[in-house]
Image (cartoon, rainbow, N blue to C red; front, side):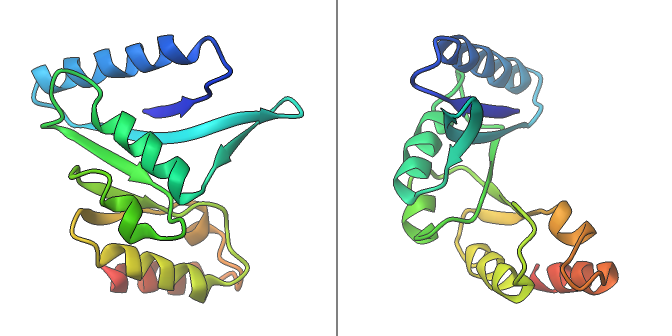
Length: 149
């Protein structure tokens, strides 16, 4: 579930409660909850995610506390600066998001590889970066991502 926290949006509290209820309900059934948290703001009417280490630490801390138990909760997180400190904000297992397609695929792979070395990072959830690599070679992009695992 996508959890966007916008402190200026009155619907945020209701969204947090709905996510917490879903986490609890899934856990009660022994099912995994995948929570993708972002601290978001509206800029010129559009939602913008804040991808600073400090913002991610705040939102990870909130997402980790959702529901009656976190026993079946995993996080889906983007790679940001200072991932070691960011990932220390929670003991929950996490998967790394691919994010926007980077013009520098090698730099993205290096970021993913560094994140995968952290103890709670368990894998990758990569979409567009593998489907639309800058050089157009999807097979090579997938092979490279699999090699990181």
